[in-house]
Image (cartoon, rainbow, N blue to C red; front, side, top):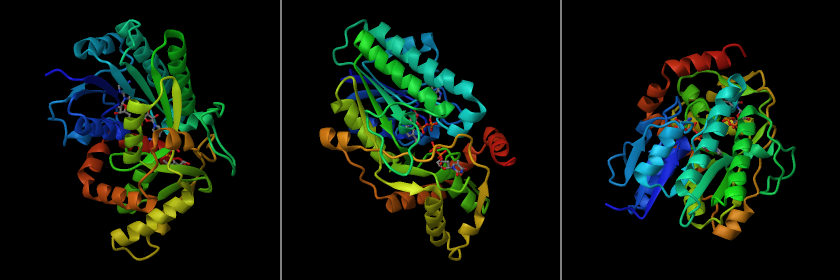
Length: 353
Ligand code: NAD
Ligand code: TYD
């Protein structure tokens, strides 16, 4: 069977990547979707069991830093597009192990860019290199203001600095070699399949187990939350309709201080779990703040709204309930993930706080 497009999705076994892979596999039977993932602690092929037998889906266990491995994937599938999500993605881990972030996020992205330029050999017709990034590259806001595409980069954590570096490399390859690149910078995602080290799935899991909810500092930091399916939809749209060499900010227009979000989660879960009203809030425990903790992220996403007609669809309360229910009915998925590595991480991250 010959496919109209052959698109590599890197990090397709992770949280956002698996939603992107599923959407593309189901929406475009005439595209071949090649999931390239090395399966770190965050990668899980169980995320894709519902679509992994489809004729237009294939998985390749390859490290994005491996030049030979990536070149072979390009040649084997005659790849003409990349949607790059593979990354080390957790700020706390970037504080305890920054070099892993430099390797995957910077060296890995450089390797992908280099392989794309080498394989496409200046024939960029119908080619696209789409880099998925984060709003954290813009730094930290005070109480006022929003990140625009033109906001100067000011990353503050090893994670955001490594993502900022990768964004710069992608733009430089676009400028220097004419590689048809596009970048998006998105706010915090939540939804099914997120690894339970990030705030929402960690707290859902701790509430179920009646474990402490470790709120960093005073819980006043603010994040803008977007349901993962809405992000996947934006990625599909940008891949197809975004302009080359452009950047699009994606956000939920949905700002919450951590403590207000956590209280909402506790209340929703009181009723879902048939607990007394207020019972889950008693689990809240204020712990030592994250080093260099960014105060506020907030996205102005008017460019993608006006130019591509995208807007966030899922109301937060509705997305949160869907997410809670997904974790409750996929307890096996959660337990499988909480293997040896997770136990060691949890102990190191929380027991000394
Ligand atoms: P994740 O940690 O859930 O998944 C990352 C995936 O990349 C995993 O499947 C992992 O196995 C794979 N991977 C890691 N290193 C690799 C390597 N060297 N080679 C091949 N595969 C490798 O991450 P996520 O939350 O789904 O984030 C995906 C992307 O979106 C990242 O680039 C992240 O920076 C970006 N992003 C995430 C958020 C968010 O809120 N989660 C928000 C904005 C942008
Ligand atoms: P997180 O999900 O790690 O995303 P990010 O740091 O990329 O925004 O954290 C979201 C917010 O929740 C952030 O302000 C840190 C805070 N947080 C806690 O208070 N306790 C926790 O255990 C975690 C993981 C996060």
